Length: 485
Image (cartoon, rainbow, N blue to C red; front, side, top):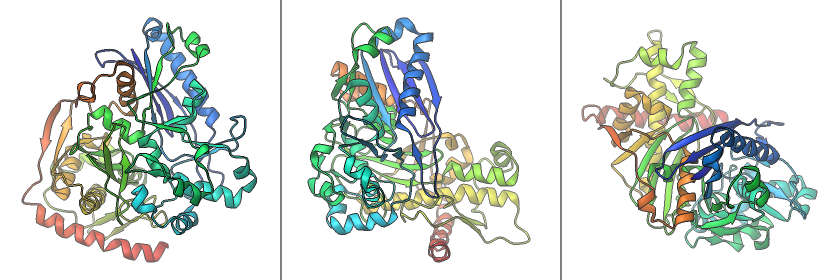
């Protein structure tokens, strides 16, 4: 038996998985986000701790015998958060989260101090990453910065509470801007640019390696016969990829969730270049990945649903099952800014091309197409960074719409495969990593891809029309940037 724990922003999810990779039980404890100032986003790490204990307690209530046989535990962690600990391991301030954008000025300061940062870390400095947050703390809360003895990411903090060990994996560490991503070790130059030292960082390991044991009192609390081993684990997207079986070079997927991800697994390190492509270590040894991120994917349709007063299902029911032609209206899905390819947290979205004859259905289709165009931008950024693919799995709630999937396939000019069980999430991937850490099994024997239940190919009759529409879409950003920046 194995446990996977997903340390999300909206909740902590724990799953119990058996030796046949069947999920026997799952429980989620909700979390809240504090936003004390505009652009701030914080959580109290103590809330993660309490929610984790409660989630596993709930699983024990329903499956006491099975949880007693747990051999391994893995984490899927929200990335980039800064947990600052003092001399005695105490939390010094609330965790600054991945979607906190206060540290925009500090990004340029970091890159001036560390001119090789993009080549070494593989990434453009963004406010969401961890290093700029620490520079912000040093500039605005110097008394906190001087007390800081250790800096941990969210899942590493939970590991510390559950094992007493300060350890983190390569995939999560990649999102700090402190990792030499190609060499898979901390960069002392990156740390120095932040005013930190190597002894303030956790020990690094691979996601499949053993990384601590559960404390005896917690093992007793949950009736476990022996203290389970923790896996090195993974950041949330890498854990999701493990759950999908996207562990081999060339494996690719498109995630149409609240935000959107275009992912490709690679066999070597490719810096992300100028298109705000993330280049991270995978949770699998000697493996990396690149991904582009759309901040408002399914969130764009949810927004349009709120504004229009119709449910998402009602909006989609007004449209055909497959696209006939691009909408005459264009939509920029920059409701929360945009990550790839612009790294712009200030720009905002827009409808363009409205007229007296514009219909609600045209606007709905424009929303779907705007997200697809953003995915195309991510695909082009990946290609420019050396990652090319022509087919990918598609996951996320939005992929349940045949129309949206068909639009994305034609806009990206990529064949998309729908999966039978593609929604297991990061917690399931974390449980797989726990199994590998305990048993030493080969990654390919454990990380099996879900069955494909259907494929959607690009419509050759729409390629040209969508290519032209995407070109018009790209013209919107400079105008919107001029208005909002």
